[in-house]
Figure 1 (cartoon, rainbow, N blue to C red):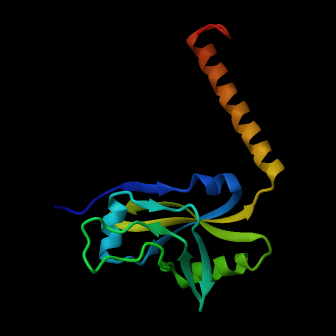
Figure 2: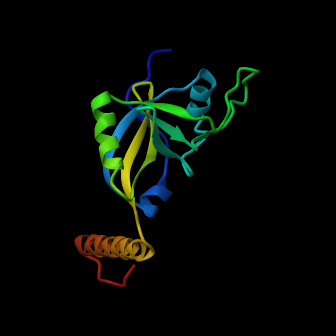
Figure 3: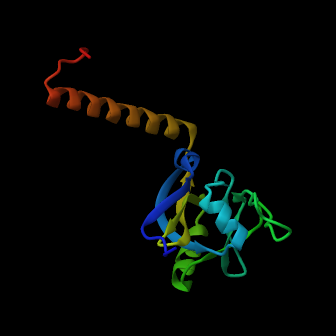
Length: 162
């Protein structure tokens, strides 16, 4: 079997996009063991409570849940272990400089395979307040309604007729 090509999204963190305003995104590799890769390919991963932090000059991913591999033996991995992120030193230094600002955090937005390599899309984010969330939802609904009306107009239908 040949190497996989293209990008295959395994999981996305929709809650993070709702809870945070993403300022900048980064792509990082992730250190995994064999059974984690097999479980990831099966789509058994959750990014809900995950976040990245610095420790000893490295970025580590905490709270990422990769379910145990069903056909694994005694070599199976721990589902919530701490995993190291792979980035260039210059990128790590830039991220750490931005993280020192108050109110910023590093959250995983999605996990995917890019040409066979497991990658994590990280977002440098600032937490939203409840009124920001409501405003974003209202804006999204308004844009959806505009697109719907525009589609009706282009198809020659009148508003309200279905």
